[in-house]
Length: 207
Image (tube, rainbow, N blue to C red; front, side, top):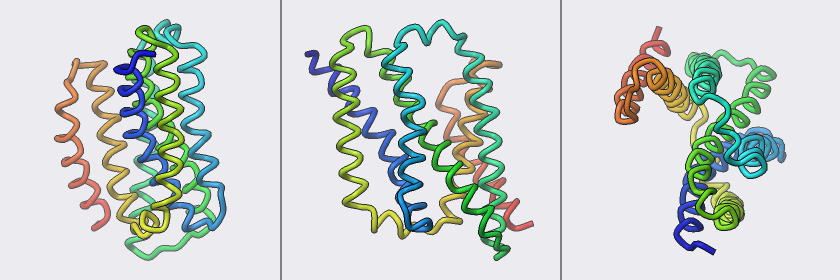
């Protein structure tokens, strides 16, 4: 086993999947059941399973197409999140729609985090498939344990504020990925986009 590859796969997977676990824990506090965790697992699995079963063949799909489609999806869910956050801040309650929206948010965020992890894992697989796989599996167990241990603390995060920030993040990632396709933008612009979208979201909420 290649220890370096194992640690790299472990590290990136823990980093990305922890965010998915945190989102699921927050929505678990609303639903009072395991649905958010199941949607989080589905979101991560829909990306990571093809990563390890298809592996390097994923590169046969032009990356620009993947980025464009992913950007559109992120913009859509970013819009839904800020719309929902605005309703919450304005105290406009739509319970059923909020719940349905919540599960789609958990699934999408989890898939995005899984995708970010998979991009690194795909680069590690040629070095050592087994080490990459074991590192990722180990990360899953660590994240599950962390989520279970810290679930009550994470659940205290206020949902409208979370949606506000997540919306800006999704808009930023979508813009960055489109920028990579059209203008070959560097990832350093992500922070700039994030700040801009935070400001725009603030204006939207105040309108």
